[in-house]
Amino acid sequence: MNVVENIVNYNERFITKAVREISDQFGFNVIQQRALSNLLYKCTQNVEITLLKEEEGDFLTYIDIYANSMRLEGLSEETIKNKCYTLKALDRYLEKDITKISVADLKMYILNKQTTCKSNTLNTIITTIKSFFNFLYDEGYLDINPSRKIKKVKEEKRLRKSLNDVNLEQVRLACDNKRDRALIEFTYSTGLRVSELVKLDINDLDFTSNKLSVVGKGNKERNVMFSDIAKFYLEQYLNERKDYNTALFVGIKKPYNRMSKRAIEKRFEKIKEKLNVKKLYPHLLRHTFATKLASTADITVVQKLLGHTNINTTMLYAEVNEDKISYQYKASKL
Image (tube, rainbow, N blue to C red; front, top):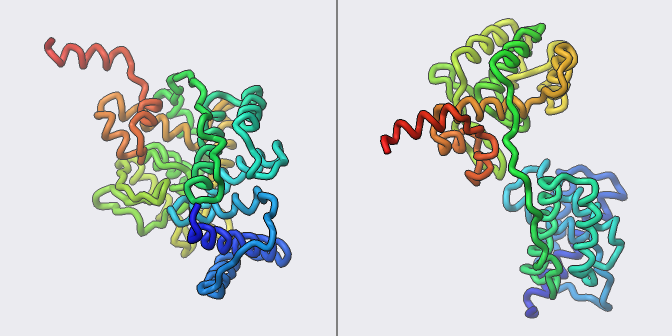
């Protein structure tokens, strides 16, 4: 670890810790926190901060530093929040100076989580922990990376269930207003994540070409399409609206606020209760979209429309049925 790295690390550690302590004391919001952070960076630009004595590794301070790094990379606040939640749970379990955490400590935590978590959830936790310690090691905050030898657990690859045509029609008929019907049709025909859906404005949609551009995970932009059926119900819904909100989907009653992620999830819950079914949530329509599309389209097309970076993720969504296997085998003319 060289001198320059020490200077940068101590400056950043001081600023991050100061912002957290001051924000907690005075209840600063995210915008105020960023303004304070920028001001402190400006004030310490030509200042070299050093330690009078070695302090214990403050886990929460390092989490804040990692969170700031993720923001610079363009990760969404929701993603950052989830990762920080995972890391804070690790801190509560270990209650240990971060510089003294060992491979054995991390393995014990993972074994503990294995009793309550599914393999895919456990692997998400492992990935977050490894990314965190890799960052601290690469940036010179830690001399040893305790997560280096931690491996993911084996996952069972199961085909996920989607709605069949009858189920989907039942969901459509259960909608008791034009807004909900438009919401169902649009979500199904685009395969959008609910986090992407809530950010859309009416002007984002091109009703001539049935296309729109959406910013998804990792701040990546992609083009998606919506069906003529979705367009029909969207136009019906928009024509009856009496508000001036720019959002694509808003509340039915005044003050007609933009629908939040939770508000959309609640609409799906209401329909689920009405139909008396076990599962119905926005992501199920995204999977149904992917499954239906994969039955005829190339998997790379599905990948692009879903916004997946890794095609293996898309493969988990695309159920390859026996009819398609038989058809493509015969079409190959082997």
